Image 1: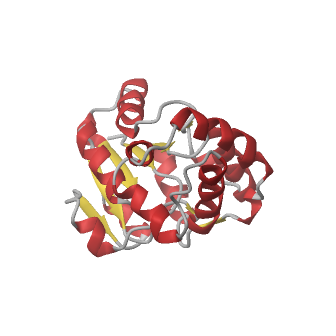
Image 2: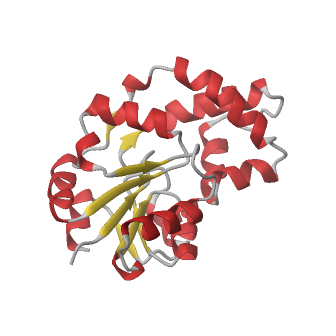
Length: 204
């Protein structure tokens, strides 16, 4: 039975916490809402949907997106590296399943990074921040597009926000403990699966 694996990008596929703490902090500062002064500030935004969290703290999302479109292209995305142990797992999974990325980062940046780390061949599509803000809506779109029953759809995320949105969308929520939120914090969101290593994806 072919399954649909929906991957978060940052923290699950690539090591990008420092990159985005700096980038998002810079964007927010330039639009007059400097709410990210540390890595902890940025991680706290991922307790729920990133954009909803920013909006609840007074961020003008339209201004943020505009500023991000100006700043992000100038950043050196080539410093981003894959999370350890993933490539052989992606190689096996993509042979008999559908792999898609659903992320709060821009699709353009994600595709550039995938090409740089030579992962683009594994993924059939990318739905980033330029498509929709809500991961629930993106998940629903992917399920409809690829025609896979939700009981065979897995969303792999590394924050409690990811898990809440996957569960709201009605798909299997897989918490990846190698990412941004630790195992204990991820457990509070009650994922369907809580895994410590990429190779455990093969057991789903």
